[in-house]
Length: 81
Image 1 (cartoon, rainbow, N blue to C red):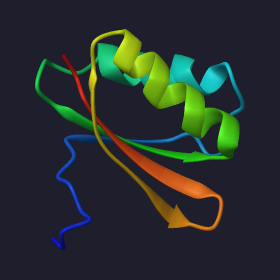
Image 2 (image 1 turned 45 degrees about the vertical axis):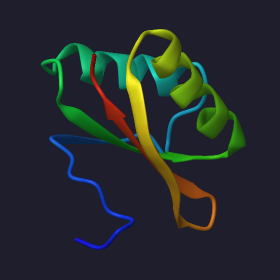
Image 3 (image 1 turned 180 degrees about the vertical axis):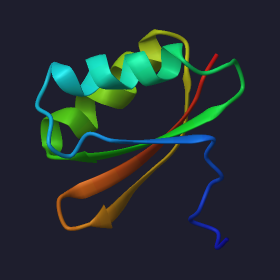
């Protein structure tokens, strides 16, 4: 694992979703996890990239890392509170 990689307990691909479903799917995935586990979210577009981590942080989850995976696609690592 290189320095840009983070271990994840679960992965969620929402590249085909649009807001507000991007966070609905993310929240459902987080609800199925236990505190301390890490969710890797793969998303596409500027609006989800802004809204998903913002909303997750507002709900008390920790944003560990956000990085570009490929043009237009980002990865967000979220630790469930």
